[in-house]
Length: 369
Ligand code: SAM
Ligand code: DTB
Ligand code: SF4
Image (cartoon, rainbow, N blue to C red; front, side):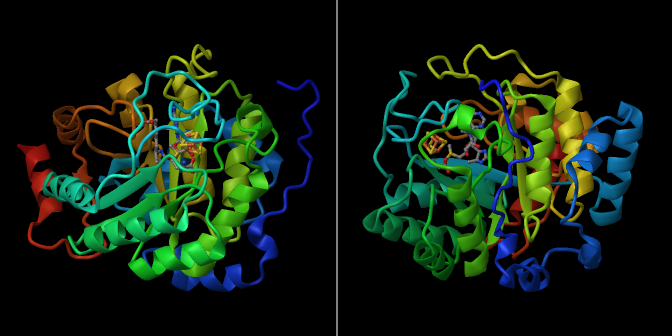
């Protein structure tokens, strides 16, 4: 870690793009009417003060905010699919898919469209309402993007919401994905602007903000969050959430990942995060971005059921469901169904009607049985 980190360093946020404010209302049709009261001017001190609250007070406040904006016992269910695995030229220190680290991962070329659609159908039939396609690219090439667009079209035709995360995009590429019917684009800030350089050197924070801006301008929903437990300081979690909340429009989906430590990556062996600090981060995200879905994302395999229950209480209302994330394990599906049943949680119905099967109802029914 560098000795002198500059927390006051300005980051050019996409707020500088004037059309963003106008977009918030119609860009986020799922957002409840309270969106007029959303704030985008959180100071570091204010966010720090939330993190510094007594745990009970923080959770109480976050849960109140959660109840004001969402049904308290519903969790949105997404399933991930790695459509292109490994051999990525980037150097993200957490990632098993970087070509620079020997993690023993077998690389795979871009999957065939039919294979991806088959996996999406299975995920839908097991109760997922959103299918997220991830590719280990720095940024997709034109031919690759054409194939990805076809995947999006066919997955959408199954009645699922679609999400993709395939690296940096140009404005034109974002428009192409939108035209294929992509609902969400996932692109994470990962950490604070100040800690970022310790984690990734092959692309800048500003590159990420630019991609987010193109995604917004194209009219897609934004899925953007970060990873905690990467050896960052508490102030970096403050700055990550502050940066997310002060984007011109809050991301509709905010994944909070706990680092999955993979042997061979530079971050393997990092001191694990206190699980209460993980829950605090979820709670503060909920308070700052009250209308966004906050996803209890990677890292659930290493988490107790009790920590996950606290995270749901603190305002997490989305998970990845399915035995795999991209290249690492996720809790098995039976375990998640039982956890939902024990907590009285139901899967959130799909935004658009799910074709052929009432998949959401099925997962909810399974969870109750
Ligand atoms: N290559 C594209 C990119 O980086 O934008 C898309 C795929 S990448 C695997 C998507 C996200 O997964 C990363 O931004 C990071 O936040 C998350 N991620 C990757 N490895 C992780 C790990 N070991 N633990 C937690 N989250 C991880
Ligand atoms: C996100 O924020 N987390 C997901 C998804 N977006 C693409 C990825 C988690 C990856 C965990 C490590 C792996 O399985 O390779
Ligand atoms: Fe590549 Fe994405 Fe992994 Fe970074 S996080 S190494 S860009 S696959």
